[in-house]
Every structure is written in C-alpha cells, then in structure tokens.
Image (spheres, one colour):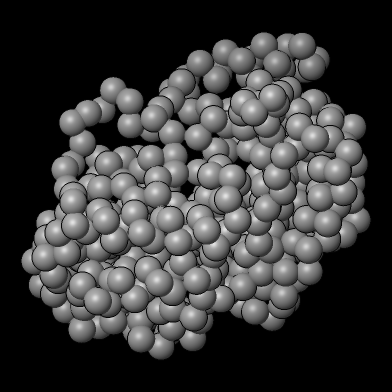
Length: 425
C-alpha cells in the first residue's frame, strides 16, 4: 500500500471517530517504546506528552507488559460487589505504603473525573454541607459535577449550563499572571479565600476545598508551599475538608512522589489517576477509613471500579518500576536539566516569557506585546511535530507549552527534544 493510499484510507476511517476529540498528531500510531511512538509508515516521534501524564514509565515498559500478560491468563475482571479480586487487595496494600499514613482507605474507579466526583460526594455526606470551593484555572474533568468545578477554559463548560450549583471559585496563586512575586500573590489569594467565606459561601455550608497542587490544564502553575499550608490551616479552622487533586501531578511527576508533600500538609482526601497504571484505566480516592465510613454500602459505586484485575496488576507493576528504578529522584534531576535548558532559551527569545514547573512537569508561557501568543504556540507545536516531537499546549489562552516526558527520559533525549524546539523557535 502506497503512503498516499494509506493516508486516504486512514482519513476515511477517522471520520468514524467523534469530532469531540481533537488530535495533535493525526497519523495513526501502531507502536510505542520508551519515549518514542511510531506510525504505520515507521515515522518515529519523541512523545513528550506521555498521554497527558499517563505513560510515566514510558510506552510498553517490559515489566508492566509482562505483568499484564501474566494476569490476563488468570482473571480479567471480578465485579467488586460480587467478589473481591485478590489483585485489588494486593494493590491497596502496596498503595498504602506511598500515601500518607492517615489516608488508610481506598476507593477505586476508572478515571480522574470519577475520582473527583466521588470525593465531592464523600465530602458532602461526611460534613452534611452543600458547597465546594475550587480554584480559578483548575481542571477536574468533564462530567456534569466536574465541569462545574473546572475553570481552566470556558470551552469545557460552554453549552452545558446549568451545571450543578454550590461551586465557588477562589483565585489561584498564579504569580506570573498577576505580575507580583510569589509571596505577595499567595497573600492576596489567601485573603480573597477568607473573604469568600464571609461573602459567598459560609464555612457552615462549605463541605470542601478542592485544589491541584500544580495547575494542570490551567498552565502548569505550582502552588507555593506556604499557600498550601495556610489553606490547610483555614480548612482546619472551619471544619472544611481539603481535597488535593494529584491526578496529573502524582506518582513522581514533580520530582516528589506527591506534589503536596513539600508543603508539609496532609489532605483529608487525595485523588490520583493518570500515571497510576501506565495506561490501563484506573483512579483512586484515598481518605481516612473513619471518613470513608460515611458511605454506607451502595451509596457510591460503579460497575468497573475496583474490579479490573488487569488494572490492579498493572498498577502494582507501575509502582514497582517507579520505586525500584528510582524514577522520582530521576524526575527531579531530569526536570532540573530540562528547566535549565529552557531557561537558557528564554534569555534569547523574549516571547517565551516564563519557564516554570517542578520535576518533569514544566511549562513555557508565550506572551507577545503583553498578549497571550496563542497562534505562535500552535505554529511551534506543528513545527515540532513535523520534526518528530510531540508537545501539548495548555493554559486558559492555550499560550503555554507543557513538557510532560516519561519519567524514564534521559538527558540525551531531553537535549534532542529541546534542540527541535529551539529550531521551531
């Protein structure tokens, strides 16, 4: 089959897919290995998207593939209301070794949005309160409840109103956006949050505060540690539950196992997904058992949550790889190398106005004459793609390029990717 015929056939086949999905790369991918993916024609791409942080151990890590293959011969699925797959128990035991000791009980589901939705339900039933505070720029999913909690882009909510009520947005400490230093920005945002509890949602009716310790879709903006510690204090003062969404930032992505730990806090509810099982659908809610006991049997659930023995085995293997290959420390070192390289480019290209992030969760924000350089980012993405590098954008105005390489990435691969990026610039 000639390339032209294959492309025509693939284009026709793609008409079968819903246009709800945007596609960075429209060339169908047939194989992945490490940081690379390959299309049907054999073209190699450096994948610095990691499936939006999912394939943190790289594509088709041999140990994870072997674990899935072994489990597939024994048990694929056991509906958890009917039976408890042994692999679910084994993973819960293993997961408890990397979560705060206080969070000793888990609820499993399939996606990050399900985890967020479940956490909000848990907070409401546990406190008897109705309202939730989220943060401007946050992304938490596309179900009705999680759309109501999302404010990174209007496009995620547009056309779906009215959404569930009782959601209030506080400002996130996005220092670059405000033009202040980190301390001043954090103080302003904390003051506004306290004001919100006096003007919009009373503490007595506020069940939870929900925050990403590093904004994901909102622009890869880390929350200062002091901001998170003060947020914990405010929640404790008013009996409000603190939900930390580590769906994109967890499992070593930021050079720490969890992004919130540098602030010294322990959340009441911790959410995780994406990198949890290296591409097999799985998410989890972690909370104290005493809090989870507010759920009576049947008050929350789902057909597939907790029942996939394949996902649980993949998650065990993923955790083993992260720990035994020391990928958290590796993420810290490689992130420092990547940030240094990008900061050097910023000095030469003023349109790249900010470089920020932690570990291998790094962003470059582009601004042209004080305006978001959205079209420029699109051009850079396409030039990089043409040269074999896949990068995603994010931010309210899509003027931020985010760097999400697999945690196994090497300095040589980072240097090659930054070279392609520099050429595009």
